[in-house]
Image (cartoon, rainbow, N blue to C red):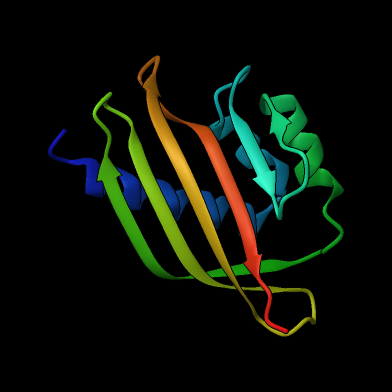
Length: 125
């Protein structure tokens, strides 16, 4: 899987552009429909595209913008792609906040889909 870095970068660019442009629940289509998982700031995880879309719809901000600072991409032994992102996000009129997000992608039915996703705001103080 020699092109894993290009695949990972293209996925992250697409994911955040779609998330930021809205509607944010549209990114749920990028998750494995039944078993894809997302956790957000240590809350119980959402499982499956429908639960993930509901979780994303429940977020209270109206506008958001992600800025990626770093992106580490590795292939896994079982042909998945692991991506760890750090950056800043700005929601509504709040000050920018630092975040980290991890994705595990698997190639299913000719598409790279999210199997696991963990998002965490980095809060100081």
